[in-house]
Length: 99
Length: 208
Image 1 (spheres, chains in turn yellow, orange):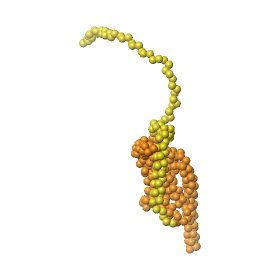
Image 2 (tube, chains in turn blue, orange):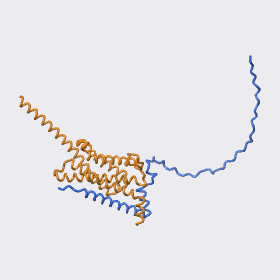
Image 3 (cartoon, chains in turn red, orange):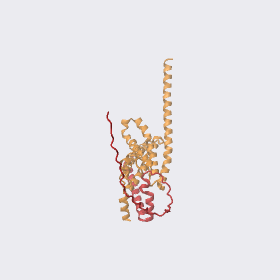
Image 4 (cartoon, chains in turn orange, purple):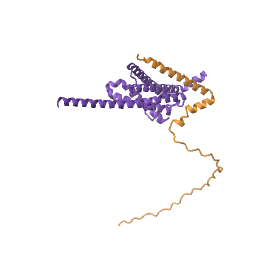
């Protein structure tokens, strides 16, 4: 039996690559042309980077939105306090005795 | 439609190249491993056929390395993924599908090391090379898991059918090969024992 030439493998691989390339391009283009397909394709194939790019920790379940109960009340301005200079007592002079 | 195709190619061209080359690489690795196991288990007796199988085994292995190279370049160039050199060169660095892409990086290293070691077997030594070459099955197994875990198209029926149809005979051939290796070892041990026995008997007859 003759040794097969590498040409067959090269041609086979290239043909498969081109066929896959064409099929995938058409598939993506077709799904992108319809809005429903676009959304589906994006969801299936390329999720938002934030969802998958990092191994994100599981999110906590979203809490139900509650309407704030109390109305916002503007805080009353505090009464201005007049500044009073503190009285300083004069200390008597220290007398040191020398022996 | 032409506008849509042009838009797809400009925005997702590298991604399509990466997916296509990955599938070609997987098909070629599968064929190469299948043929390698077929030869190693020695279920083929015709030497001419074995020679032809060996040639296709080598050609598909080299073509698979080229396809893996294209896959790596396309992943590196993908503007959406932006893995960086470290993402494709160091296992478990890429954030997206960290584990499955990590084993993909390991599979690629093994593929290049074990595949190209064939051309260095004179330096490595035939026996050592043969032992190392047995680990090539790991390239197929890791590649399969990388594809199943991180691949976009692995949920498609054609891929699943191809993987299932080829994985079963490869598993059978691998088990057969392990058995063949054990049987060959046993035969060698018996032959050595017989030679020693004959030599001892001859010595006894010469010097009673």
